[in-house]
Each structure stands twice: as C-alpha cells, then as structure tokens.
Image (cartoon, rainbow, N blue to C red):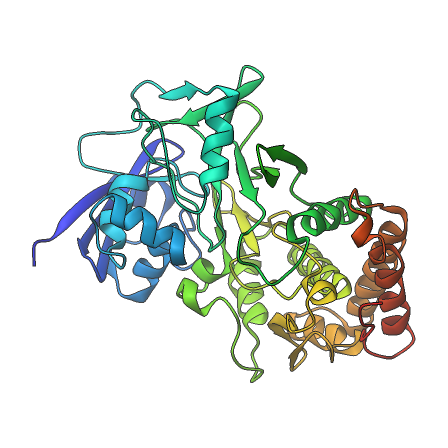
Length: 416
C-alpha cells in the first residue's frame, strides 16, 4: 500500500511530517524542533513528546484521528471527498487546514502562509448551511477545509467585519454553530447547554462563551472557540483522549478499576504545570460542576488541556456541558470513574474527595474544593434563568441536588 505524507504545522511553523497508510500513521519531528525544544519536551501532545525517533503506533493514530469528526458527520465528509471513513490521513489532507488547537496538517509544499481564504457570507447562505446539517449543501465555491472532533453536527465559521465568513483553506474559524439535533432523545439540549455554560460562568468557573440564535427554522447555539484569540490567532489544545493516546471511540471510561483515567491525566499533566495542585483543584471543580448539573456526557473528549509554547499545561474552559440526566434519566453515565463510581445517580461528595486524593490532593483540600464548587454552582443555578420556560425547574432542582450531596447523600433528585 502506498505511503502518503502531510506536513504538520503548529502556530504556523513546521514541526514534522505525518505519514502512513489509512490505518497506520507515523510522525517524525523535524530536527530543528528537537534541537530547539529538547527531547521529551511537550509541544504537540502529552502523548507525543519531542523525540529524534519516528513515532508510530496507537498514540500517533489516535492523536491525529482525534482531530477529525466522528459518526455520521465523518461519513458524510468522507463520502463527499471519495475517501474511506477510516482513512485519517486522507481526511486530514482535505480537512487539516484548520483543526482544534494550533495544529494544521497540509499536503507537502502547500504551507499555511498563503493568503487567508475567508469568504464573506450572506445571511441567506448562513441560514442555508445551518439548516442543511447534518448533511452539507454548500455553494459551489465553498469547500470544507476545517475539522473538529465530536459526533454532533456543527459548522465552523469565522466572525468577519461584524458578519459571518466561510473559513476557506488557511482561514481561522472562530465560532462553532450547532443546531438542535434532529434525532436526539434529550429535549431542549442546546437551550440547556446555553444555561449550563452561563451557570458555570456565574459560579466562577472558566467556561466557553455562547449564545442562542435562530437560523431560519433551526435553533442553534453559537459557541466562541476557546482555542482562538480575539485577533484570530490559534491557541493549542488537546482533549483527554488524545493526551492519554486513546481512540475517540473510547471516550467513555469503561472501568472503575484504579488508577482512574483522570488520575492518569493528572499524572501526565502535572510535571508540565506551573502549580500542580492548582491544576488538580481546577479539574476537581470542573468534575464537581458536571456532577452537580447531571452531565451524562462529561467524557474524555469533553475535557481538554491548553498547551502553551514551552510546554506549560493548563486546564481548558468547560465546554459541551448540559444537564442531560435531568432531561433524560437514562443519561446516567458520569463519563469518568470518580472514587471508584461511574454512575451519576450514585456519586457522592465522598467519591469526589477520594478521587481528588488519588490525584495527590490532601483529603481536606479536596473536600473544601468540592464543597465550595458545589455551593457556588447551586447559588448560580438558582439565580440563572433559562429563556425556555420548560427548563425553569432546573433553577430549583440543581440547588436541591447540591443540598443532597452536602448532607451526605447522593444527588438522585428526579424530574418534577
């Protein structure tokens, strides 16, 4: 089978070459990158430290495949470009000009230095693009050259001179527009996501900025990308599956046998944090928030880290958060094992304390961190009104869940 290759850039600078076949990839860092940053430094991913050796195996495939969408969205894009769905290298050759974080994967000799190809869009064009999802019905001169992981249908656009622009090859997408899913069993999913993000921000937790908007006949949530700067630059990030060299299909933790997946993330990230205990507390607050609101989709692709040039690691803001359990009781998987428990209906404050202690926090520190986060989220939820009257019960239900957790029980409050 013929081997192909792509040039990999980070912050617009070449850092190595990705090569391989549809199901097996290898990555070679450039010599000057190794000389500048040094062996074992973190640049692209916690799972792919800088080295002189050619890297191959699952860590390489899972990192680069994790830049691509999943499920039906991936199948549509593969079919449109006459590429087999598993062919990560082939898909990146089309979609790799604008990926999550600051990484780009481009055909040899095409570099990221050409003129930006953002094309101003009319309101009608934007409406049509959003309404057509999960399929794509684009104007003839619009090619999809940007990629973002996940299953849910979405479109990546750039904010340009007060309007929207299509991010053609090399242009930086700045926003994610997700219309209400057509086939989700969870009612009011995007409205509740907007509410949850506002609750997180009101509770003092870093969270992605978003607002609700209607495009023709489709209601949608418009999310400002946290891995982009106001002036159109890229910030590098990776999700927890990539950091642990896991496949996107393994995003839900499948076992409660220690060490937990989050313990492994903390162990990998801590040596590269300026203040390891601050990173642990930030993660515990984020995990506590997702427990309190009943987020049954808090899996490893919905947590990320930011990687600064030089290798410093920070926890990324909360994103893709919604009280799924409170809207759809079967959504009861916490996504990660916490203190040996993975069911949202069975988790307690003590599970959070045990989990924080497993990461290296003192038990009292973990308890104070989790309790204060619970209290802040409860107060914020009570004060945050949803634009959808059908979701007003959340203002009472979430604080009641907090009360249950703080009095030694589980947060098993059901829908009213």
